Length: 209
Image (cartoon, rainbow, N blue to C red; front, side):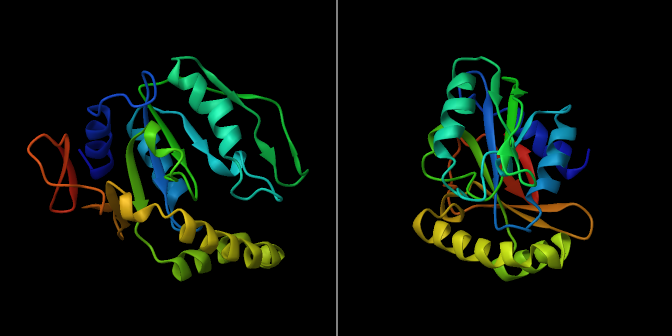
């Protein structure tokens, strides 16, 4: 059993947080590795649904997607219903056809701001990718190429403003650090010691009590 399998097992033991769903957020700076972690956890969970917040944001509303998230995703999931959201097409600059998000035992939501204040009451656990802003942004710029340089210039300003107003890391349950092989799982600032904790951290791994 590798670290992603252990993390998946631990997450499945959490109590539901959004109706029957354990909603797990993967937050961090753009380019920090959130999508890769979410994909790995999804596979370890047997193809758990993943909502990418890039599908709810737009060019004009980089962080003003809270209403769409609540109405299209959180409210249906909280009723145990399949959610349906319209992903934004960043090339065509318009929303596309509806895409379903089932009320699975674990649903992952990944993206910058996934752990924002308005979403936290619906979360079972908040993971934060432990990679600094400048390193993350450099990775993102390299990934997207020179043609996206102007977008990144605007993005870094918007992201800095967002986290200054609504930081996620101080309340994260787990800090996830990418290693050459696998991940280290560290207790986040939001974790308090207690015998009733379901998930604990030992030697860089998640364990279920």
